[in-house]
Image (cartoon, rainbow, N blue to C red; front, side, top):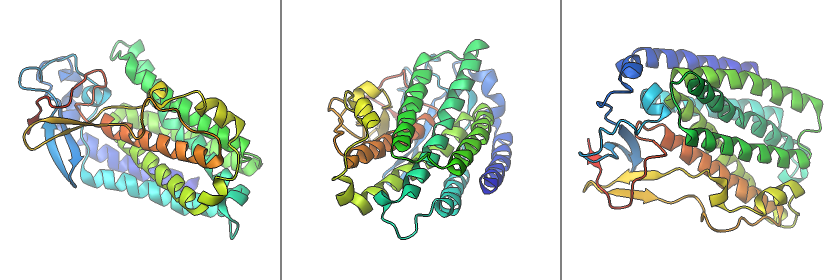
Length: 325
């Protein structure tokens, strides 16, 4: 936990330097009700970054199309984004892989495997709690009121809670030291994210994108290494109760994934899985495949919400005009 907090504080120092030197952040609250909000975005596309606006020349000054990133945030540099990713990798590989090392036992046979997942899922919920807390505060103060952002983050937290319940049913929370480490780390991480989200939502979303992306790869590696064993084990009851009656559309976690072609035309990528298809949940393999897909959706949402043009209430259709900056 000391390593985690030390690395986090290193991140805060970097955040303060970046945000403090950004004129966009200094002027954001003065301009959030003006029509000069340009809603520009930098998206990863084709291996590079392209700056473009999802708004056409006619509608780009529509001041109702605002998001937390647009109203309270400022863009971050590639260097800061890379630092966030490296910090998360260091914390998870350098701390959790040591504390929860399962020795020579196979993953599905080791209690340490599920204890590790329990700890990670306990902590993974904190960013969504933090976002909700700050957005409720902004709503109370009359600074920002868009229910769909709170709905999205609540749904994400609800999803992560069921990941946690699954790991508890698999025995991940049996040892007191594991609960102590996970819960106390989560407590400090929550307040850290609250501060970061207030300072710059873009930074908070970028940091959580790194967390969720790492979680996706963690579960993917576990599935690849234990595929045969997992498919012979039954799904926990809590997983069947949660996933058994849901489709991806019911979970309401998908955010748009826009791109802009060289010709200035919008393309819209679909969700990780079919929004209308039921989610299989008969075996433990089905459960971990579903959790892995959830983490991918979370990472996609965090990536989308970093954009200054990420208003989830502003819908664009395939083939419409976008402006390449």
